[in-house]
Image 1: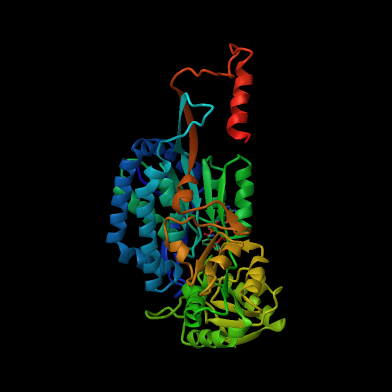
Image 2: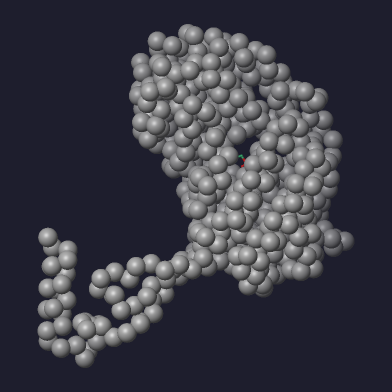
Length: 498
Ligand code: NDP
């Protein structure tokens, strides 16, 4: 049995090509899996999942550790594949893979501790029972992923779902099917017996079919618009969903911030991966009294960065051609409403590449402030102080991550932000800490990948009590005496009423 979808190589199958966005060359052909094939994949995943669950935490850990070592052995090959399907520079792909490996290690190592059976206190009233809780696998988890971090992002679901004891059927983005197939084929080297982790490839219809194929949970990462469609499809069968969507993350610069560090982080967080980062820096609110100095530092750094497809380029192309129009419209809208371009402008948009653009004093109701741009553009707006920056950051409909630069009150400002994750005096640090949950609020979605919450997301708790001996006072029987409830209430008043 293979770990690509069943019937994946029938003669009549339709194929589609993944392309290198730097050159337009075809990287490879992949099957467009039909609805029937997706249903077959989920059906064959079910017994495979039961076998996988039966291995227990230690058995699964051994297999996941083997997979991790296989991936580490193929880092160069895997990184080159990521670069060819996304266009991102080699070092960006390698950085992504370093995080993948760290998360895979963490999930395998901690699943037993987090999800395994443990005793809890039965409480005073149920002292004659023992009480245990255990997090059981859900069965088959469907994962739908985006192209911007085609390994790191879906692995936030895949690694944690597998460690929790589930089988996984993964539908990668149509732009990065090879990355998904690479993950599944390397997994099958570590787990050849059963199709525990399968990949189905194709377009949005294949993803939609996965939502309706009878999976026990659907973990979606992508745009908010598609997330709503996924939820609607899953609602038909009451399939639970995890929805990780877009963001419009803000970085706040306080008056006492280390401005050089803040500028470095701003440029990296905004331009890394050509700005195609869900929790990347899209807007900056800088305290008025340090704004000139900060903006000068950012401008100087950004001017040195050049996009390109050649080795050594600082940023790659825009992977998804239609995103170029979104970036252009946001830049034009910002300028038309009175914003100023300090670096670049509409002329920076030369598909498939976009040179970094720095916009300042952009009205808060312009698209460049309210909508996800997903390009190497930075909006920097001056605010009276950092708290005003937090207020503006919180005004949007997204709430994925954020960053705060402050020497004296970083954590206080972080707590005031309405979002799922904040880095103080850094950007995106939370994504690289496997023990921390990753996810947002508002239009950025709900549910969590990574960390203990990410493991529990792919498991269902089962509570068990076991009666150890008969209680002196048992009100839960028709054999109770007339005094039993009275005595129980007396106990409750004595214990909890004072
Ligand atoms: P999309 O929403 O366009 O697509 C995401 C996935 O959904 C793709 O695999 C896509 O397939 C699939 N899909 C499309 N239509 C349907 C449908 N009707 N039913 C089921 N699946 C469907 O997002 P992008 O791939 O463009 O990714 C970029 C977005 O992802 C950004 O908004 C970004 O912020 C967000 N993102 C969020 C992250 C987070 O953790 N919160 C992390 C990374 C990205 P196909 O590609 O074949 O159309």
